[in-house]
Image (cartoon, rainbow, N blue to C red; front, side):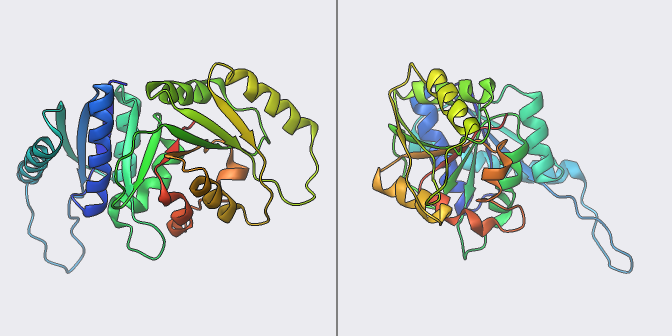
Length: 272
């Protein structure tokens, strides 16, 4: 891992993500890229707006980023940090950045259900679905733990893409972690040929990793995933958002609070 992109809005939520990313960078020797996307005020009819040159906004934002850089190095040591700021729409600019630069991981913050998610938190699900790089969302206040136990949620309804699994394996091998693959089954759910074929394929792809398979039964998918992660003390939960039938059942673009069960531990999303 060489480059970790950390979008920020200077909130406490994005601060938790920055702290987590810094600890990852120390272990992997990666460079952190702190990235602030700001909105330029747009004049509305009959509403007076004082126009501020974009260059002035960029200078003020860079001051904030430099202050953040100073705090992070004082807290985490002399890690390599690059500072970026530009105008635009947060989600669009982050997605474009991951496509145009060699970003190995995006780390963002989320607040959880019942709380104001902030600019970064409210856009995390959109970035997870469309970013070219793996995306990890960090719960507010989460204290870093080295990812030694990684849970992978899979419904076995479709063959997982080679590229996504390759990225997942690369992440796991960075920390020599153990993998727990689990498929939440509804009571009395029947096995299908597709699920059996997917299971065999996944077993072959994960063959060189230390891993175990689990098939807990529950009608409540969200509760069971949350319970599984807590019971097995997983350090990271991984999902593949290309599997829309599964992922959309858990995370809806219109209801970020649906992610509450995911925010007990960092969520790693690896897009196809």
